[in-house]
View 1 (cartoon, rainbow, N blue to C red):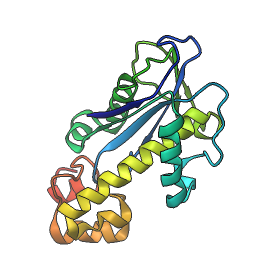
View 2 (cartoon, one colour):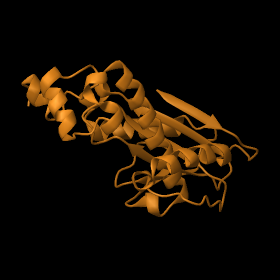
View 3 (cartoon, rainbow, N blue to C red):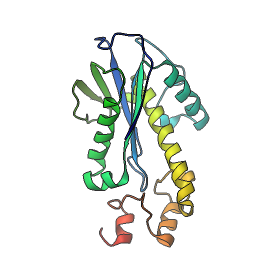
Length: 203
Protein backbone atom coordinates (compact mmCIF):
# COMPACT_ATOMS: atom_id res chain seq x y z
CA UNK A 1 0.00 0.00 0.00
CA UNK A 2 2.34 2.70 -1.22
CA UNK A 3 2.80 5.20 -3.99
CA UNK A 4 6.42 5.91 -4.91
CA UNK A 5 7.91 8.69 -6.96
CA UNK A 6 11.48 9.54 -7.84
CA UNK A 7 13.57 11.70 -10.07
CA UNK A 8 17.31 11.46 -9.62
CA UNK A 9 20.64 11.79 -11.36
CA UNK A 10 22.48 11.13 -8.10
CA UNK A 11 24.35 7.88 -7.36
CA UNK A 12 21.95 5.29 -5.99
CA UNK A 13 23.84 4.93 -2.69
CA UNK A 14 25.08 8.47 -2.21
CA UNK A 15 26.23 8.53 1.45
CA UNK A 16 24.62 11.92 1.95
CA UNK A 17 21.08 10.76 1.19
CA UNK A 18 18.83 11.36 4.19
CA UNK A 19 15.09 10.70 4.12
CA UNK A 20 12.59 12.60 6.23
CA UNK A 21 9.48 10.72 7.41
CA UNK A 22 6.23 11.94 8.92
CA UNK A 23 2.63 10.77 9.21
CA UNK A 24 -0.91 12.09 9.11
CA UNK A 25 -4.06 10.68 10.63
CA UNK A 26 -3.20 9.04 13.94
CA UNK A 27 -6.14 10.59 15.78
CA UNK A 28 -9.19 10.19 13.50
CA UNK A 29 -11.99 7.69 14.05
CA UNK A 30 -12.06 6.78 10.36
CA UNK A 31 -9.73 6.27 7.44
CA UNK A 32 -6.10 5.21 7.13
CA UNK A 33 -2.98 6.49 8.80
CA UNK A 34 -0.72 7.82 6.04
CA UNK A 35 3.05 8.28 6.04
CA UNK A 36 5.42 9.88 3.57
CA UNK A 37 9.16 9.65 3.06
CA UNK A 38 11.08 12.34 1.19
CA UNK A 39 14.72 12.70 0.12
CA UNK A 40 15.50 16.31 -0.76
CA UNK A 41 18.60 17.55 -2.60
CA UNK A 42 21.42 18.47 -0.23
CA UNK A 43 21.07 21.95 1.29
CA UNK A 44 17.83 22.55 -0.61
CA UNK A 45 15.41 25.03 0.98
CA UNK A 46 11.78 25.25 -0.09
CA UNK A 47 10.04 28.43 1.15
CA UNK A 48 6.89 27.74 3.15
CA UNK A 49 7.79 24.29 4.44
CA UNK A 50 6.59 23.52 7.95
CA UNK A 51 4.25 21.36 9.96
CA UNK A 52 1.46 20.49 7.53
CA UNK A 53 -1.21 21.16 10.18
CA UNK A 54 -0.07 24.79 10.36
CA UNK A 55 0.05 25.35 6.58
CA UNK A 56 -3.18 26.49 4.85
CA UNK A 57 -4.75 23.98 2.45
CA UNK A 58 -3.98 25.94 -0.74
CA UNK A 59 -0.37 26.37 0.33
CA UNK A 60 -0.12 22.64 1.14
CA UNK A 61 -1.35 21.73 -2.32
CA UNK A 62 1.15 24.08 -3.95
CA UNK A 63 3.97 22.77 -1.79
CA UNK A 64 3.05 19.18 -2.62
CA UNK A 65 3.58 19.90 -6.31
CA UNK A 66 6.90 21.62 -5.61
CA UNK A 67 8.11 18.81 -3.33
CA UNK A 68 7.34 16.10 -5.86
CA UNK A 69 9.11 18.13 -8.54
CA UNK A 70 12.34 18.79 -6.68
CA UNK A 71 12.68 15.70 -4.48
CA UNK A 72 15.42 13.20 -5.20
CA UNK A 73 12.81 10.59 -4.24
CA UNK A 74 9.48 10.46 -2.44
CA UNK A 75 6.90 7.85 -1.47
CA UNK A 76 3.53 7.80 0.26
CA UNK A 77 2.19 4.72 2.06
CA UNK A 78 -0.52 3.88 4.55
CA UNK A 79 -2.07 1.37 6.92
CA UNK A 80 -5.81 0.87 6.56
CA UNK A 81 -8.40 0.81 9.37
CA UNK A 82 -8.35 -3.00 9.61
CA UNK A 83 -4.59 -2.94 10.13
CA UNK A 84 -4.97 -0.18 12.73
CA UNK A 85 -7.52 -2.28 14.63
CA UNK A 86 -5.31 -5.37 14.42
CA UNK A 87 -1.96 -3.79 15.25
CA UNK A 88 -2.98 -0.69 17.29
CA UNK A 89 -2.40 2.83 16.04
CA UNK A 90 1.25 3.07 17.08
CA UNK A 91 2.31 -0.11 15.31
CA UNK A 92 0.16 0.70 12.28
CA UNK A 93 1.81 4.13 12.08
CA UNK A 94 5.28 2.57 12.22
CA UNK A 95 4.21 0.08 9.54
CA UNK A 96 3.07 2.88 7.24
CA UNK A 97 6.37 4.68 7.82
CA UNK A 98 8.36 1.57 6.97
CA UNK A 99 6.31 1.09 3.81
CA UNK A 100 6.98 4.68 2.79
CA UNK A 101 10.75 4.32 3.25
CA UNK A 102 10.74 1.00 1.41
CA UNK A 103 8.82 2.68 -1.42
CA UNK A 104 11.57 5.22 -2.09
CA UNK A 105 13.19 4.83 -5.48
CA UNK A 106 16.52 5.92 -3.99
CA UNK A 107 17.38 4.00 -0.80
CA UNK A 108 18.50 6.43 1.92
CA UNK A 109 21.56 5.98 4.09
CA UNK A 110 19.81 7.54 7.08
CA UNK A 111 16.23 8.36 8.08
CA UNK A 112 14.95 11.10 10.38
CA UNK A 113 11.44 10.57 11.75
CA UNK A 114 9.15 13.13 13.33
CA UNK A 115 8.25 12.04 16.86
CA UNK A 116 9.80 9.75 19.43
CA UNK A 117 9.66 6.33 17.75
CA UNK A 118 11.28 4.91 14.62
CA UNK A 119 10.10 2.03 12.46
CA UNK A 120 12.40 -0.93 11.92
CA UNK A 121 14.46 -0.16 8.84
CA UNK A 122 17.45 -1.49 6.92
CA UNK A 123 19.35 1.75 7.52
CA UNK A 124 20.14 3.95 10.49
CA UNK A 125 17.30 6.09 11.82
CA UNK A 126 16.63 8.65 14.51
CA UNK A 127 13.45 10.08 15.99
CA UNK A 128 13.28 13.86 16.34
CA UNK A 129 10.54 15.41 18.46
CA UNK A 130 9.29 18.48 16.60
CA UNK A 131 11.28 17.35 13.58
CA UNK A 132 8.80 18.88 11.13
CA UNK A 133 10.07 22.28 12.30
CA UNK A 134 13.75 21.30 12.27
CA UNK A 135 14.32 19.19 9.15
CA UNK A 136 13.18 20.27 5.68
CA UNK A 137 12.80 16.64 4.57
CA UNK A 138 10.50 15.87 7.50
CA UNK A 139 8.49 19.02 6.76
CA UNK A 140 8.17 17.91 3.15
CA UNK A 141 7.04 14.44 4.26
CA UNK A 142 4.49 16.08 6.54
CA UNK A 143 3.00 17.97 3.59
CA UNK A 144 2.85 14.92 1.31
CA UNK A 145 1.26 12.73 3.99
CA UNK A 146 -1.37 15.32 4.91
CA UNK A 147 -2.36 16.13 1.31
CA UNK A 148 -2.48 12.44 0.35
CA UNK A 149 -4.65 11.54 3.33
CA UNK A 150 -7.03 14.46 2.75
CA UNK A 151 -7.55 13.29 -0.83
CA UNK A 152 -8.24 9.75 0.35
CA UNK A 153 -10.83 11.07 2.81
CA UNK A 154 -12.53 13.09 0.07
CA UNK A 155 -12.91 9.90 -1.97
CA UNK A 156 -14.27 8.05 1.06
CA UNK A 157 -16.71 10.91 1.66
CA UNK A 158 -18.25 10.22 -1.75
CA UNK A 159 -18.74 6.55 -0.82
CA UNK A 160 -20.01 7.24 2.72
CA UNK A 161 -21.63 10.70 2.49
CA UNK A 162 -23.65 10.67 5.75
CA UNK A 163 -20.60 11.14 8.01
CA UNK A 164 -19.26 14.44 6.68
CA UNK A 165 -15.79 13.00 6.10
CA UNK A 166 -14.96 15.72 3.58
CA UNK A 167 -15.20 18.33 6.34
CA UNK A 168 -13.53 16.71 9.33
CA UNK A 169 -11.41 14.06 7.54
CA UNK A 170 -12.48 11.45 10.09
CA UNK A 171 -11.47 13.35 13.22
CA UNK A 172 -13.81 13.08 16.24
CA UNK A 173 -15.72 16.33 15.84
CA UNK A 174 -19.14 16.68 17.40
CA UNK A 175 -20.76 16.42 13.97
CA UNK A 176 -18.87 13.20 13.26
CA UNK A 177 -19.78 11.64 16.60
CA UNK A 178 -23.44 12.61 16.10
CA UNK A 179 -23.45 11.00 12.63
CA UNK A 180 -21.86 7.88 14.10
CA UNK A 181 -24.62 7.60 16.68
CA UNK A 182 -27.30 8.11 14.04
CA UNK A 183 -25.94 5.76 11.39
CA UNK A 184 -23.51 3.47 13.15
CA UNK A 185 -19.95 2.86 11.91
CA UNK A 186 -19.12 2.18 8.27
CA UNK A 187 -16.33 -0.11 6.94
CA UNK A 188 -13.67 2.62 7.17
CA UNK A 189 -14.26 3.40 10.84
CA UNK A 190 -11.62 2.23 13.30
CA UNK A 191 -13.43 -0.25 15.51
CA UNK A 192 -10.79 -0.13 18.23
CA UNK A 193 -11.27 3.63 18.74
CA UNK A 194 -13.78 5.21 21.08
CA UNK A 195 -16.60 6.14 20.47
CA UNK A 196 -16.77 3.58 17.63
CA UNK A 197 -15.95 0.77 20.04
CA UNK A 198 -18.61 2.01 22.46
CA UNK A 199 -21.27 1.91 19.74
CA UNK A 200 -20.24 -1.64 18.94
CA UNK A 201 -20.34 -2.58 22.61
CA UNK A 202 -16.70 -3.63 22.72
CA UNK A 203 -15.20 -0.70 24.69
